[in-house]
Image (cartoon, rainbow, N blue to C red; front, side, top):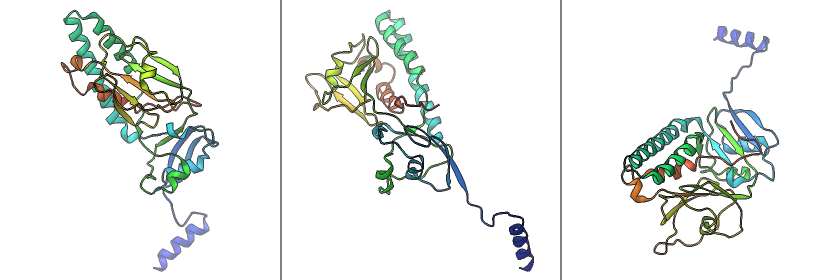
Length: 260
């Protein structure tokens, strides 16, 4: 015991810390006062990073994103599966001489291939709100990133459309109003759409006369995915459209400083 005390005393005299506290590093970017890498105590939670970064008042909290390295592999597989299914559908359309459908699928494949795999996880990221919500204030892991965008002024329409649209936000307007401004492409589903709200919440909505959903206003930065027709995807994978919507929900809003 005396020997142990002597070792501790020697370390103290040499300036070495007697206790070592584990730490973790996370990155915070966007509309925050202290962007960059934060060093936090091991066991830190979402609120610790958000409060340390000083999220700005103009930050768009509904579109804030929690990006986790632990989710990258799963989302890479999801993207790879979508691209494979689109490849197969494109090949099948060409084999059957359906050039219009092959063009639509080809454009969707190109657009999807260009999207990053982010590792985004659904989360409440308003600093004070998450601080007082025990179940939402989840623990961080090394390498996690938080991103706080500014409030967008547009709604985007993508998928089986002639060309992706970025449309001015209209207060209280539901998805059907935006669809009328963005013509669908050949092979689009005219019965259903997917609405991806900026927090990553996905809603499947009916837009035909027989299944029309209750009108729902879209939040700034929401995304409308016009799916391929159920008849087309049923020959390849009936989950293709829902998988696409789930992958789109992992994307983040732009600016003021996009995460790498």
